[in-house]
Length: 350
Image 1 (cartoon, rainbow, N blue to C red):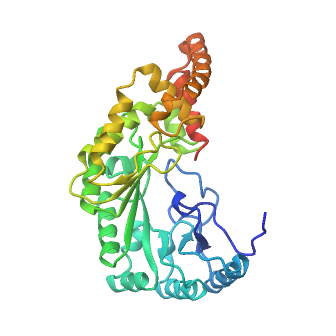
Image 2: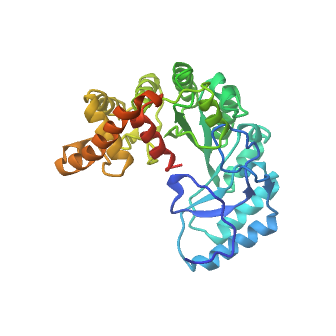
């Protein structure tokens, strides 16, 4: 493996796998979300401009003429940089990599709204034209319990602020983030907020509770009840039904999602999405379990893979073993062996 002589952060969106990665900040300026451990123990810092520019030219040398059309600025919030410094970095980026057509970054609502409209426009004009928003939910109660440090109003204000500057918006929603307790509020209020924002793209993630997080402690204390795989699909079904009047791309790209085939454009593909969800929900319980386990073990990619008898039988053998184990110890397993297994397999993907 090549040794890089420029910094790389610990995370990037799945769609930025082939992008140039340049680190402008270290850590997350908030770092209090109950479900996240990514930046725990890491103080948030804005890297010196000269260090970032040095990294840009080091990356140019390292990739030896490789053409990049997209770049992602790491880590948690490039908008925390002073505007003049951020524009200086963006100008250096486009000088070193003139083929870039998209530069993107995470951005927190509280940080973005501190920028004036003129500043946001100048940042966009300098090349930062794509924004990733970890919205997670549109419910004020779900956001509060997850300790996101933002409100639906701040998300809406910052999103419209960025769009007015010409930036594209991609928002992430976490299925199951409200638990069983707040599932209805999570879905209805998230759909309402998405309808107001009308982002360029909506991306879904399925919740897996990380060990060692505050959220895991809430699960252990009985204050947060994790949704089953089927319940998260039902949440997605209801979310899709409520999305209206928007023309966003819609994606389940991350492998943590069960129905990764739900990718396309709203409203054109909405009926097809709902039909595929209905196909899954109409399966008998045995086939649902077979598909879930097959997806989590990497045997299946699409619902139609259930028709492959060899794969089906292979998965069924493992499923039968788990069901026997469940029959033996169900009395001491509150959620059952199967759901616990599905959840642990999801955990491996985060």
